[in-house]
Length: 214
Image 1 (cartoon, rainbow, N blue to C red):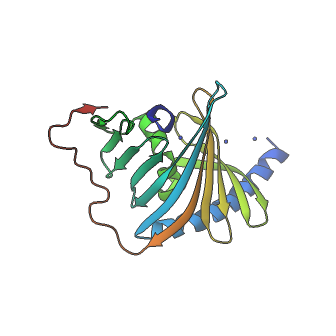
Image 2 (cartoon, one colour):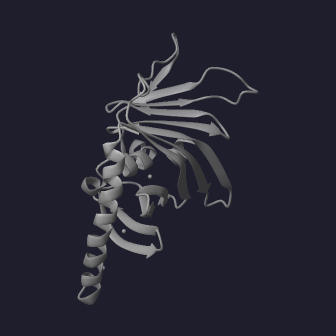
């Protein structure tokens, strides 16, 4: 799963795009302010990966964020933990329960693949307008679909974000990775907290565990 979690033109067209971007910035700004104002944001996620081979795999778990830090826990089909404390990214992959054994633990500074792993947390909890540009917006009722492009090199394309404009909540993120796998992450049970759980963004490997540097 690490490799998958390892995540937008002249004359009349230009004027339309600028107008769309202006409106999008307002939509995005309102949602971003809500998330960044909270001390802690918790949510459940469902991630669907449609591989170019034709296989589709769904992952479920929880995502917790605060001040650029995050904790992403995948529960099914396999257990995995990603923790970013603002400096170091920890990746813990647990073996299937029927096999047992020690987890595979990696740590390091986020590179391009690591940033793809952090894409959801960056889009939801970070200052998106500094790292991404909005190129279009399509509104349908209380739903707004934003087309977004990274401001620097990132191995993702066709990046879109769906925002509930009534609640100013981000409901879904979709994109394609560097080999054209299609990824979508939908979010539910979103909770905005006024306090941070102690040590939730800290990870300490078990004593004697082997740790691989990314």
